[in-house]
Length: 260
Image (cartoon, rainbow, N blue to C red; front, side):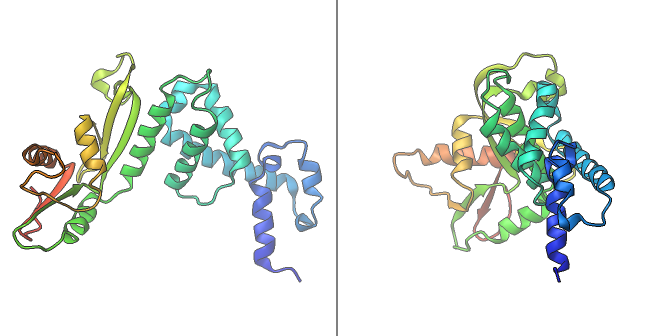
């Protein structure tokens, strides 16, 4: 006798197929599968379409600006994605990340796609991730992990600071005060930061050296008062303190575990 879990797995495979979601020509042959014996295929197809629409609504909401930018293209991309990538989870962010990977690999560089669509999608993915982070708890956990070496100072990127490298300045699409400004083609380094008490994550442009410092210090790094490897330690210290003032970097000094 077929195990219930095996039958459920096969049923789920049908429910996430393009035949059931879109009612394609393959639906008739799929309906003859012995695993579907005794089931109302019309109701199954309706449920498959409902689940698909619910999934796409989440993806469209995550990539709202990308969808507006692409118009009907976005619907085509979403349909192709759903046809080839059955949901592995019903959590929004993992599915959005999978969709983003599909978009970058298959669509982002096609002539019909605006050149800055990939940058817009990358920022929206970071925003989606930032919204589910726990700034207060994650900051406390990070500070608790600072090396306890007397007399030393350490720094690291804030765990809720997400870094995005863009080939276009797409910030006018995210900042109401700059609405209407043209998207400029230039290299832009962006940090998306989740902060306590704010519903919307902040989007900040970083200088290249700040982006590089944060990218290279995702773990605790000693803030050495002496020059190291031809770097100016004083300049590094000033940059760390500047970023700490913007809550982009955490600093620990003398085992106090206090953020500066």
